[in-house]
Length: 286
Image 1 (cartoon, helix red, strand yellow):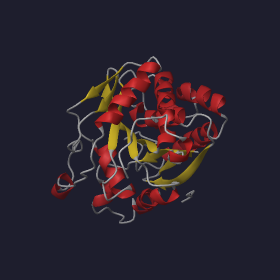
Image 2 (image 1 turned 90 degrees about the vertical axis):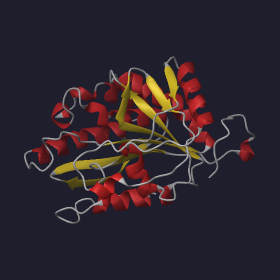
Image 3 (image 1 turned 60 degrees about the horizontal axis):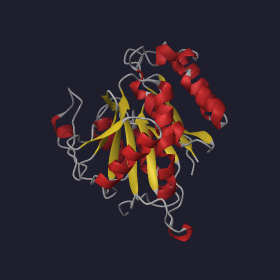
């Protein structure tokens, strides 16, 4: 495994320079399989290294985030939507797992003012967006955050994906969020760099996932304009559709949002390992 090194946001990007928070990086993290980090597996260490990576993320940041904007692969809407509740509930959107995994908690507050600001930023970038005052946090949010920030004391706003899964639109949405980095807001994409359910546990997908991961890593490490051009055409990459079958790329799109938010910053891989016979990775910008 390779790793690299609160208060609610004011929504005011015009604060004096001396009062501004440190610029946050942007992350794309794997969120595992359902509530995988909170149950027993065979073999027992299946998810241990991924869990260790997630637990170590906070220590790599310049300071504690003032808020978190998280894009999960488990919320798709016709247009971009953001959670607007001050106290979002949890959505246990997984099935067939032990009863105790439906009692997990993560009482992080929402931040309605930040939700409104995100809608404003997206609108200024030409992207339609709305606040959803009822939506809670799905497991792509609370499962990784329970490891990354276990105190649940940092406000969280979730951003949906767009149902048409247009790569350019998601990169553009990320670019619209980039200003938040200078306000102490951590932007996180939560998904999986490989997400073909038939491939997990199948050794035939080990070289398949490795080749796609190598392409993805090279794309992320490219300068911004080249990076975005490659990601807009990600479906043409080696084994792209073996790694993310048609119509199932929702777990990759949070990386495109993260890449957009990380425009102008160096991209690099910060974690990678073989899990269930497939290569899974995390990336950081800045």
